[in-house]
Amino acid sequence: MIFDFGGVLTTPMEDTARHFAREIGLPDEAYLHAVAVHPTGRRLYEQLERGDISQEEWNASIAALLGIDGTNLMGRALATLRPEETVVAAAAEIRHRGYARRSCLTPWA
Image (cartoon, rainbow, N blue to C red; front, top):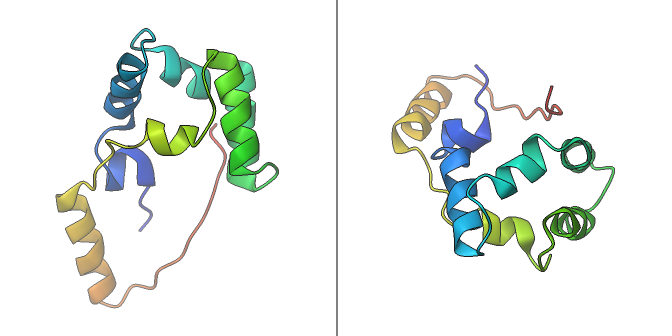
């Protein structure tokens, strides 16, 4: 069984991204576009997931795309993300029944 983090084990990433964009005075889709659509942003996210760049490098680079301060950017952007309790409970039950926990990182397709 494989569970994705953002939007599966958590509340929807898109909602969180839109909330953050509004909070800092950008158009609703600005942050989401920068990390998931913009070619440079997608490349940076893939590099971060592979460990090729640090969180600080990612924060600074995405901030530059958005024209904002990069200090703790991902932390600020994901501040409203919450666990999706029903899925977390299901994952816990599966693990309780004896399935091993494994971690796997894959870049966005």
